[in-house]
Length: 361
Image (cartoon, rainbow, N blue to C red; front, top):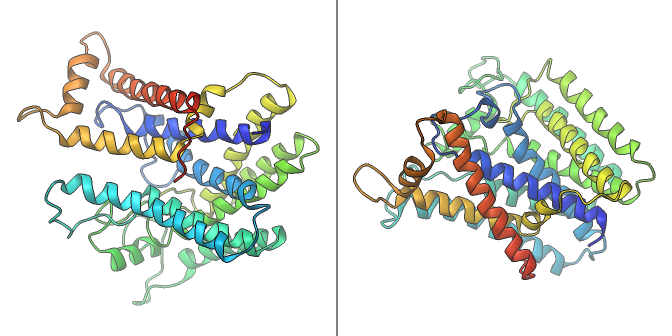
């Protein structure tokens, strides 16, 4: 791999480890604020993680398919990979919560992180194969503006005006509630819902365009100027369409793409311009990102399911026995547990990398 791709692998690995960090606290009751999602409107470091990954998916699409023929075989591979991602996500939602009986489908959550990655990968790849970069920009802008106008100005069937607030008076939540019903993460919304998946495709398109920029980059300042453009646009649009991960608002697309471009620019500068040995440890995870994310989710959920006695499962037993100490604040204990999990998967990534095991989903 050349250094440019290596920079992307570093960011991908860092993003997956950050995702594991925020998903595996010792206890959900004691978490530092930056490791929580915003309650509704707003942006925390945790809110950056998923859009960063979709942004990286876009960059990977550019480098993976820039020389691929626009053939039925290519489309078949894209569709199969998308179905694998969706299937893995559904497996996590179906198998673990209902093991071993598989008889409670009434409240099965249909959306999920891997499902969204699969859908976004499918549509973004097809767009990339059939559109030039100017068309991709136009499509991205149409999604961003169209989503804003639809959610902000189309009245509901009863004539009431829409809002961006949590509840059924929000178009994204309204459609999810009426289509998915009880098959959502929360009773009134799902952060990986149907309608909010559309603007997440725009996030991926921004990654495709940055991939093109990286390939022809003549000066490092260009990537930082693009990052600044994204950020300014996102925070200006925030005035009318608040930054919100749960509904993946248009301002959220722009702001998070700006932060992702900025962070990637820093990594690219250190790796390609300064030739520093920076971030290699994250590359180990980045080379098997989906595999490690899936394993972390599977193992974490399994540890909650397997009980040791009436009062504890494997997760709570390990946390309370090893990490909860009277001299430590509970938030720190909770984070130390999460960091231990992160180092475990970092080690796993290292072993897979050294053994040249790269599992493509």
